[in-house]
Image (cartoon, rainbow, N blue to C red; front, top):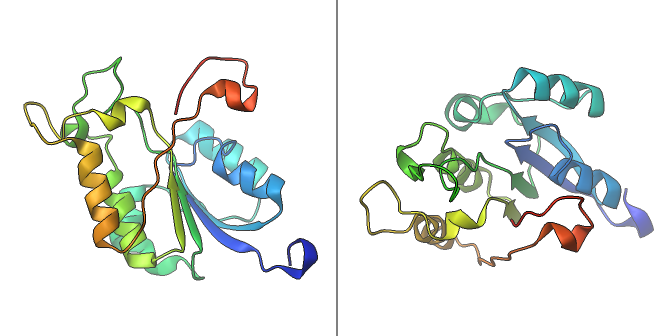
Length: 173
């Protein structure tokens, strides 16, 4: 149980990296029970195993979305995700849906299937303006919003600078 007898929210974190974003925030707040991670990078996986012993790493998010979703043993209250930013970054090619690293479709599929109370996703500001695919007039973020709305979610977007959290680098999300 969390502080004052309040039930902890179960959290599934996708595209976890080394686990210092959403999983660490949940741990620090003491209001979340981390029930799973999803990461494929070998170095990151090693760090996750050390930081979160006993927490299942479901590995490849594409496999999780279509083959392993039934393996998540509990209801999920919160899905958090930090998908690769390269498909949307202003510094990159901005291939969006045409980039093999884009996993938003899988994240949206997992959210639709698990129906958490909340979904929190962070990415680069370039996601807000990236075309759906090269040459497309459709904006990728509009697609994401429409999918969430179709699944009954209220959307709020927020841009946060690293200075808001006293990070030693300059970056917006």
